[in-house]
Image 1 (cartoon, one colour):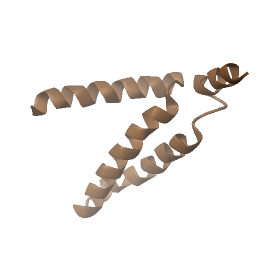
Image 2 (cartoon, rainbow, N blue to C red):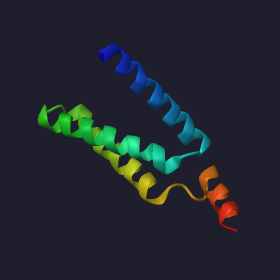
Image 3 (cartoon, helix red, strand yellow):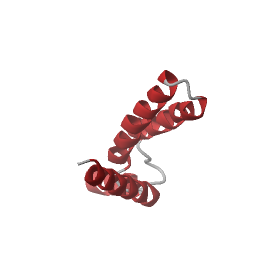
Length: 85
């Protein structure tokens, strides 16, 4: 069961990265980053691995995207303005 889950998570993370690059589904994709970096950052603290604690910086960036989206530079903001009119 571990190998299929690895393929699933790798596929989801790749699709999420492509969505962020294209500016689509910014907030939905940021949820993945918040969850992932909270888990890996906490694991880094608990295991005393300083190299992994950088994930808290990535967590902060993903959290900002989750709260604000990217209204100026993403297609989400442009599409949202057109739909609300």
